[in-house]
Length: 89
Image 1 (cartoon, helix red, strand yellow):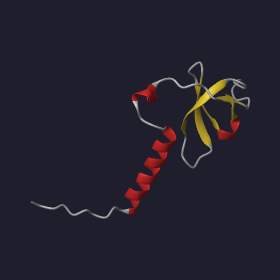
Image 2 (cartoon, one colour; image 1 turned 180 degrees about the vertical axis):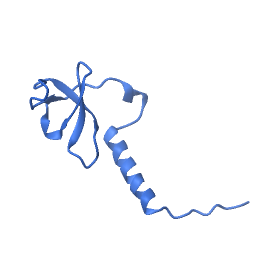
Image 3 (cartoon, one colour; image 1 turned 60 degrees about the vertical axis):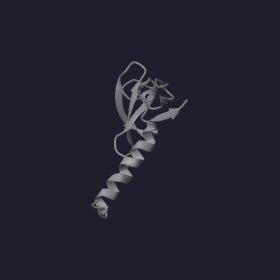
Image 4 (cartoon, helix red, strand yellow; image 1 turned 135 degrees about the vertical axis):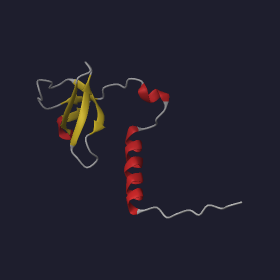
């Protein structure tokens, strides 16, 4: 019976694993309930395209190191805004 030798992971592979793990932690569990609609726990604090005060939720960050996020409003519209533009209800 052959034994497989475990090779050492490269620095790039380790870096990708950290990014993926961080992304999955932010998303939460990936269960069937993941696809169910979530409440809208934020509202738009800044006046961006006339949507000030409307309830929204964060869909996904633009980049992990960026301050830009994509939000979805109750009517289904999506917008990329600064993370400083939303407040928790």
